[in-house]
Length: 293
Image 1 (cartoon, rainbow, N blue to C red):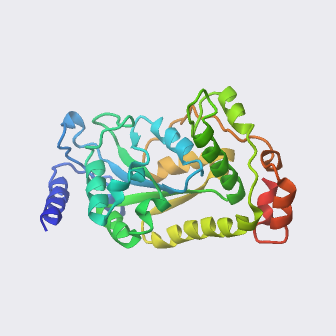
Image 2: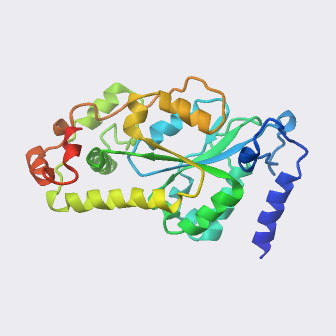
Image 3: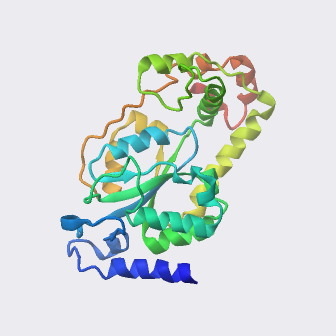
């Protein structure tokens, strides 16, 4: 009860701010916020409206690269996989307390900008407590006016290869004894790309179905929340998709950049050790098109 009262008081405190933007359409007002951080003063930016967002994705779907693109915008602070820490997602109360701290601009991370941040959010993997508590979290998103950015990957076979390669490097630490999930230099990417996983074809289709279902469940579970759906392949090939994201967040358009270097750049067949077995397994199935990656 005390936590509920504190949360309600925080929301009411935000609403009591004298700030207002008459140019904001009535349909947009639930998504315009004026947080009052407990740890610092926003000073002259107190009346700079802030949009709340969450990037919902799956591991090895390009979300790390995508988030660095967003963070290159001077008005966006996206704070990484906050819920990769299990204690923060141990129950609904822990989750909402963490989100309250984030959206009140009291979360400290390298992504923090300044008092004039105009959009604040995080990257949240679907398997990090999100689907386990999706009803309560969806209600929270709706109540707090949080907008969702889904970033998914169409070719789940390419994602599977990336997962296996990343797991291999986590165990072998190929780059001078250090595990690198993402790299900033072509030479490092080429070293990591040399590993070609052997895929267990007996489990492959079941794994692809599991990934497919998780993404579909995420879209259905949060279908009533204001959202935009992006696919990694589209963002890579068409950078106007980034403009769509900035328009979605109602932020000024500017060129976004990232230091991330893509690891797997060859044909998919060149990154899988037992390509023939994989091809024979997927041919004639609903996942046959993945072989063209």
